[in-house]
Length: 88
Image (tube, rainbow, N blue to C red; front, side):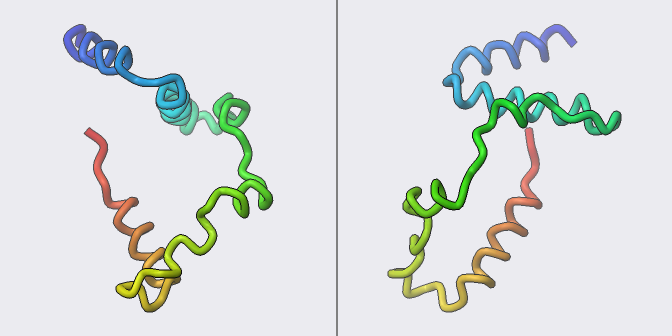
């Protein structure tokens, strides 16, 4: 068990502050999901407002892609692929 903790600690030391916030959110999610508690990552992660989304550059990101004929189907496929990923 100690080797695993050391390995995790070593990897954590290589992450940026924003990456560490993501790790914290995930760890708190795992720790609290069974209890139904609200994790404090809701307080850490900034909320994405419609204005921020419009200014993010994401709107229209696929407009020049000739390989994407139906953006809804493409987005659905990406979500399905993301859900099937395994975490090492």
